Length: 281
Image (cartoon, rainbow, N blue to C red):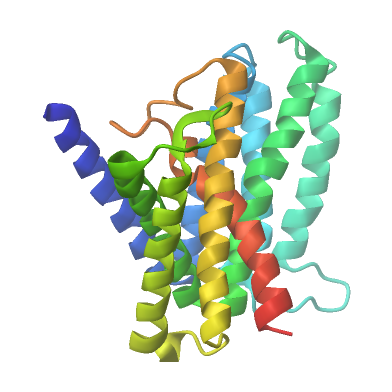
């Protein structure tokens, strides 16, 4: 019972922070993506290198991730580069280039086990974590807060629907090699939850989703559900390959931050492509 209460309190606080940041505006959104980048890259480095990694390389990777999220931060979306001057996003990208060079050079001097493996993990961490979070900022600027808010809500509903339906009637394994508990019944339960929510959003809050017609809205909901499921499976693959149960212990009852944003990291690229190709063209 105590674990259930702890898990519930942590979940409520986690959701409240995300909702507050999304609705709070550009600086809050940048703060959220940068915080996720810092925490997730740190966790990723620790689990992929089995805690045998120098603090120097981890700090450098965390800095690189924040530079990338800042370069596309919503608060800098209106900046115009003047002749002979670099905007803040431009400076961030410039320093991100410095980070990439420095990351390779520093590995020459840091003796922390397998250098090639650690370099590969660093670059993978940037692609897996920093790039999707930077894309999240781009999506926030391009579509507005309500699309991003809807995306988070749909991720949570997909997880809830999959858990409820899967627990009740789940029999056919979805991807037993990676995640033995997931079922096709659970997946379709999550999809139905998302599609119903999409109908409610479209007809109840249509003014917030003017860039989409009904079918595009339903496609958006399906995209979130499918990509969210894959995102969860990708992190399960990483953890299973590394022999770890949770990515960390930051969130009591929930594991690490990667355990919470695993779906988001795949949903964001998928939704970004969908929005720009289907809804904005």
